[in-house]
Length: 128
Image 1: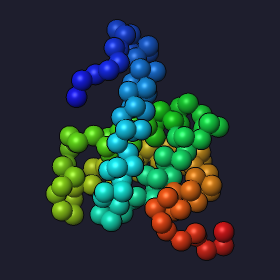
Image 2 (image 1 turned 180 degrees about the horizontal axis):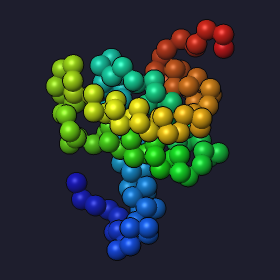
Image 3 (image 1 turned 90 degrees about the vertical axis):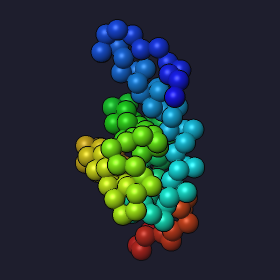
């Protein structure tokens, strides 16, 4: 894949460019891949909630950066375990997402989860 964003030499200056590249990748590929594999990805609801958290304008930049990195790993065709492997293909993606969610769990709001369930065609959680 061609790199559309030139990265500056300084690692500190690279972060905004990396986040922008991850955001572009996620916006282009996220829903297509999630919906294609949602029946095989046990963490689909968490991924969709992460999407709604990332697209929420009140979400802090640090949280967006962490979630975009995890989501970019999910949509990238080359990763530690190819996603086409039955039963184990998404375990590395799950580990990356679990780590990211653990870091930003307080930022994923109930409304993000509700939007995720609706987008995936799941019934609302009981009590909502």
